[in-house]
Length: 130
Image (cartoon, rainbow, N blue to C red; front, side, top):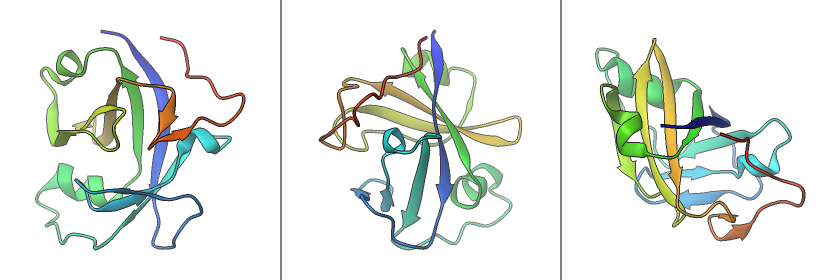
């Protein structure tokens, strides 16, 4: 399985320019490809009340995540502690969140790297190589 850095996701309570709605998770997200440090801002419609005892799910909704592009999502998830997904956030692939070494990681298997939620990539953007 191949894996490469994709973005860092940070929670916000403030609306951000260029947000996209993700129905499955009920959050608005920004395009990390449009941010110079590949930051994705996430804003929940309503933050779920997750007990701290559900460590992975609590961290998913309360801490940043690091996202990696993978060439095989099923292989990437083998043996991992799945906390959310897999699901298709916007017609360009499948994503899932895991808890690893106390941190939330997102794996994305893109079916189409040519856009983000139907919008073309910013000029000059290219994915990190595998």
